[in-house]
Length: 370
Image (cartoon, rainbow, N blue to C red; front, side):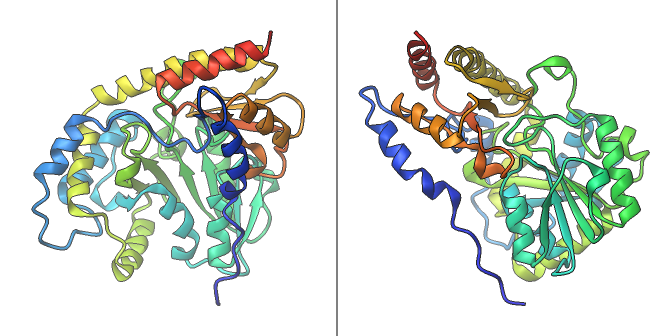
């Protein structure tokens, strides 16, 4: 089956608002895309530099050192023991994994891909690439017949929603009853802010309290883009059911989808160093502490947002009106409609801007409230 036409890239619609924001006398504060602005850790850059003699083809499955680093990281940081090298796979960023997973699993026109109501758009695009049908739902009881793949996202992009152990159990039970693969996008799991997630570990779908030790049909995706400022490295990985991983490895070998060798060495360094992760979390915490009350003072309500990289905000009007208001303040955010039809009155505000720019945004919002 030929690839059907895909929608236009949604962020292209933001061009006039970006121009408006740039016209502000003090310049733009870009809180839209969520691309990291802080330095890549020295320990990672050093590992990359030392691995530049990369004359041989890299391994699609990852070097033994990288696979072991991923296994150890899951046990140490995510509370998931018992994985082996057969359960893990490095990927060229997490977006390509999300976009290509339905195709790599062999889904087609008779199949349904379920994703959250407030969702990263690539879940639906991945379904379209495979010719499958995307359905938005947060309730396992609503998943339709024909569901072959379910995407969960915790903490959520854009809304910061966190799934707890019971949420995961319900989803896994339903997916297994339907014979569906369930994949959990967990890229923001190091960034918990409110309620119990301010101190408790955000769970993974591979947590033994969810799986009972059986990861059949389950996959978790993770990225080092945010926790380690490696968005430019395209450094990510998946883990879970060894049979599913083996299938993905076979497809990726044939397609040449392999992470460059020097980047694999850099990932080993990033996964083994926890200090830079803790430091980066505190940077985001400080920026959030400025932006959240400033948005609230300016008339926005913050929904969910208990974890993750964004504030999910609404002032009870059409999102494009809020985008325009913020642009007039020199602030660029993301409209909720990019994340699903159910969120036409929300905007997504990223924590990824330099401290000085975040302070400028907070000051402008405060002034607008007077």
